[in-house]
Image 1: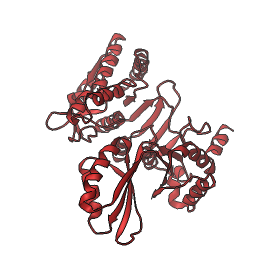
Image 2: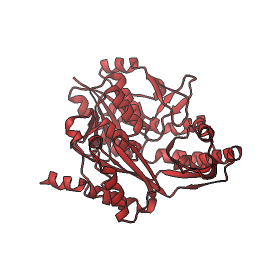
Image 3: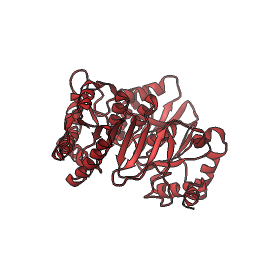
Image 4: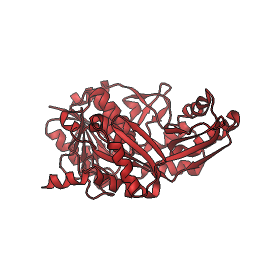
Length: 411
């Protein structure tokens, strides 16, 4: 008997009939002799609807009440799935994050999990009960409802799997695995059978929508094997696991893109110690994550500084920067939301040179200007004009032979 944690996203539970389909899959896993814990998201579109209601009510809603509102979507799904399984003759029980409890910090709308009490769940599993848990949500030390941020149900699933020491965490979604890039953009993209935690971490952080970044961090930390699969077929998906020698032979595993970032530039910044801290400390205190940062060469004691944030944080970040400008003596600030981040990822980069050069030359041949560059041991990212996103992804996918690999696999 294995302990299997399954997670179903919004598209998998988007309608009553789809929830019935999930129930049948869960029941089959249980009938095969496994203990089953299921984490579900809100029905497709429901969280967006709730967010729109909050935005309609006021421009800057209370973060506490925002979490109270948007967490309700998952409550509907866990109840419906439990009802369906019960009608099929199975013992099923639903849990809100606060009922387990999933303990988090108090950073509303982007809370981090601190601990999970597995006592109640283990008792129910011993009694042959299928457990249905609301993803995306938890509770802080003061009893306030918290949410983990968009895509947080993935994190809930992997965290629960880690707490229960599950044999596998299956993430069911509307795609049947992790691809070399977005197959809707590049039809030649191929499914990756195995990918390392490090590569998946980079892909998740760089815009790949298959897994949420914190879920991968959890998986890596606690060595949870994650199987990304489709809800709508029985084909094997992609295993996210420890790096092995086979993975290292591939120079570039995938191309990721992200249109969800914005660029903020501050002009005439005094080139003095402590200035960067005065700019970025208030952003950190406001829980705004800064990604890429570049600073131009100082001229006459002044420099320009550019950084990227999530588009959803741009307005808030811009206001903070405008407040800081007067204090530091900067001359101006502007933002640009029409940007895209294109990235190449692969653990093979550690032992091979010239990969960044190939990327830059490929983009140059297409007349695509690079505005910012960021690198790590296994990735290279460039900020470009958003209108060139699809072209950049296509030519890079071809330049690194990822489409050829698909042809070879078919042969």
